[in-house]
Image (cartoon, rainbow, N blue to C red; front, side, top):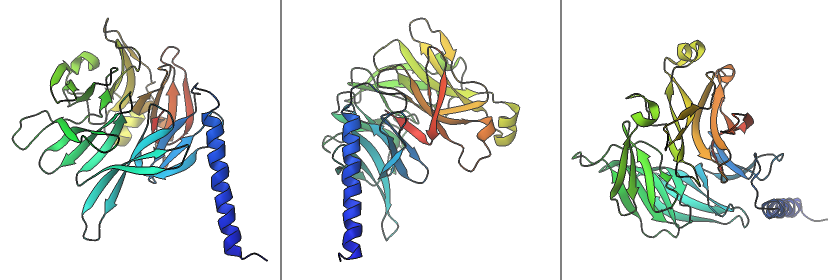
Length: 319
């Protein structure tokens, strides 16, 4: 009789092979992206999950946070935090290939890293990093780990903007958007400022933006942008948190016409355009869920029809 540990190892290996085969079949089934897959998201247990296709269950595929799918739809970037025995902390940006299950480190830093964003051509990863010298700053690195550089940010001498917004790539992949609480900036990869737009153009009023707000251009149209901003919440929401709510909007940059997409009883954050630009994914919850231990859900919304679909429990969706 074969030893139990050998049988167990064989079962685990068979399961892994079967899982990879299923993923390969799903990923090669076609280039169309279903409403509920392929889709990445995370949960606060520190796990990145993957939904291969609409109707399939989420699969835990990495330990980490802040996942962002690459332009090939097969690889994604994510972040891990490590604490050494002496208490020193470090952050690592990783790339994992879903097809092969291979993982490689891109860069390890002593500064806190968050919100990596893959360039449209797949050559660079932009991210926010906090360090003792420069505070929060916008950085980029090539996917092979070379070319690491700081693009913009504040310093102890006040020589730059106090950035707080998630980085977003412009359509051409040659420039980046990020913001402080008053201005949306667009920087070239050499750090030069291309343009700045007062956030009041989007919000209609001053001082309503927070560090969780995002401003994301449409993936194929330079005249359309999605964004979130603080809004009055329902009585239940404001009485519970003593803070305003956050809602999802789109704006036509040619006409300045603005449209609110999420209802009054819903919090919206972590917005992300689908690859086709037909949907916006986001996380949040409705008032009815706010007292749950983990209320956050991943949703999709059609900006044309306003139809919202709840996908699963989680945050930080990316396609």
